[in-house]
Image (cartoon, rainbow, N blue to C red; front, side):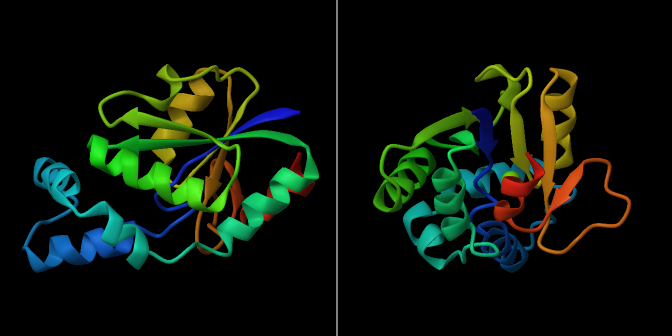
Amino acid sequence: MKNLYIDFDGVILDTITPVYNLAKKLNIDVKTQTKEVGLLYSKIDWETLIEESPALNDSLDAIEKLRQSKKFNISILTHINSLKEAKSKIEFLNSIFDDLTIIPVPKSCSKTMMTQTKGAILVDDYSGNLKEWEEKEGIGVKFTKDKEDNCKYINITSLEELINLF
Ligand SMILES: [Mg+2]
């Protein structure tokens, strides 16, 4: 079994669109005002946000199929801005899956600092995380809503694709 780490925001749930919409309302530019965005993330009511965020391309069903394939040892590896955010994500995932490993990563730490990376797969929508992962001899897989042209990484639009890729 291959070790497989799956990002949460932008891969499992589309939590990013609601946050960016809120930022827009508050006149925060997500590209330049990173400090303000961080503050926004820490103040958000994560329980509501998770309820309002749609699953991306049937991600929850796909995770179940990945588990049934018995090809992967699956963990969710997610950056968090606050313990409240971690708790909401943990409770959400536990309400759906039994016996799943969830690793919350403090926003200021690299995902590579939290677990072994050598030969392990990371599925993430953020190229920065994939770059760090591959620098530590891991396999980076980029998740996007739609296929990306000239993607530097293996590109998938559904988690289910992993079953045939590995
Ligand atoms: Mg993400």
